[in-house]
Amino acid sequence: MRQRNAPFGRTLCAMVTPFTPAGALDVDGAARLATRLVAGGCDGLVLNGTTGESPTTADAEKRDLIAAVRSAVGPAVPLVAGVGTADTRHTVELTLAAEKAGADAALVVTPYYSRPQQAAVEAHFRQIADASGLPLMLYDIPGRTGTRIAPTTMIRLAEHPRIIAVKDCSYDFLGTQKVLAETELAYYAGCDEHILPLYAVGASGCVSTIANVVPTEVAGILAAFDADDTALAAGLQSRVTPLTEALMASDLPGTVTVKALLNALNLPAGPVRAPLLAADAETTANLLALYEALAAIGCPP
Image (cartoon, rainbow, N blue to C red; front, top):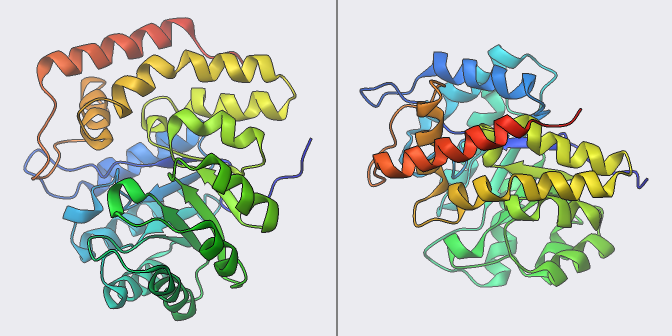
């Protein structure tokens, strides 16, 4: 079995940010959810990411969320804090605040909307990496940002001692394999349908959105592969596919669908913040039915 470089764990959950019914940050709910995720098999958590509604949470809320989750899960669980913005200066500020609040690493997305050239993308990441002592996980998701991190740029950035990981939502499997072959970067699948395929070619693990509701099943995919039971790993990946499709490939953002299902299961989530709108009753009922069907099958040990 290949020795994997997994600096932040193997099964990371891109955790939602729970809110109260009135829309305020629910730090108690966040602590309960984080504890449940770790107990369910997640050995790392990503906070304040896209799934965590980072575009609509205040800087102070981001800081308070990190502190609350750190207190709940203790020092042994890696916490990766989303700090990405379209503004390099603001991103540096969030990185420093995340470090002070107890994060172990920073997840930094490509600057969005302004669509900088690759030289500017590289300079952005280097400036943030130089600004604090936190290691960086680069977040490559061109479908949302409008700009990807080109493989050649990624290879150059890998030379920086604090740029050590990537959350890969590039949908460029060939480019990903090229970077894996030429660097020591720890790659994490950021798309749930790619968990097993990317792990099979040498990734370190995943940053999963569906793990908010099925952490044991997600962890089981990687555990089966590590045990050399590729048939079981493939079966588990296929088993979660209907729920993955409903949560992640509908017309609704994953944050909306995951929060709808968590709320239906009486787990901490609460409302989404505008401009997002809550899922309707029909969508929620369908998600719950798929979840219950998966739960009835169970996850092999």
